[in-house]
Image 1 (cartoon, rainbow, N blue to C red):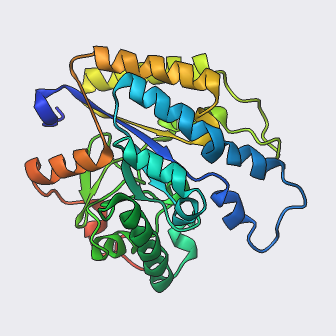
Image 2 (spheres, one colour; image 1 turned 180 degrees about the vertical axis):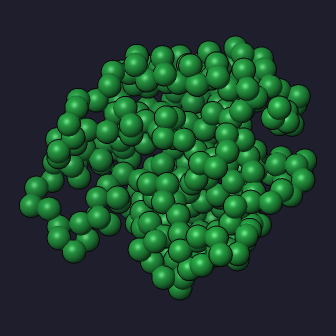
Length: 286
């Protein structure tokens, strides 16, 4: 039988509401050596910092929910007023690379450099150095966890080894899941996707079921959303309803990823993690 996780305030399950506020940075990184000949997807993604994030902030304020925004440094520099608005609204700012670079594509020095640059900028905006990181597209290199810890970070939120907080090396891991990522439902750029996006009601039903499952098993629901996708008006309406439902469940703790990581560090014993065992350069056990 799985041990009961010690959620804050004696709650039964947990909910983190998180956003990857990446705008057009993933496309700029992916096509850095071959810029596209049109601006269709660039403009689609720019909806996030122009309009989507403001719609989302209104919904979060209405629901009384504090969220975590994982922000690439390039986005913070390019759309600084929007990032300042996120901070002023009381939400957590956390790292998401400089221009959405997956760690596997960088050597150790490059990863440290890009994250230090982003950390310093987000720290300047918020007055406090960020304590967490999420890797682009949930892709992590084996050595990245040690680099994050060496930069003074307390947690990562990129991988899927549990449905409750756990540890990887010196970091607390706030696990994610593809089933609670809005891109699985909404991402459609006209660039080769084989199906149209799901409707907002479909995502609401699926994520409401995730909340029910978490309440049954005592686990975490870690919602990952992107303002250029979930910031559209019909989708924001359903998000607001989902958050209202979650707050009505008195047995669900709701907070930021950083708050949950700090709670885990204080209350849970350090358990062995998969990457604590000896591995080769690719992370495979020796």
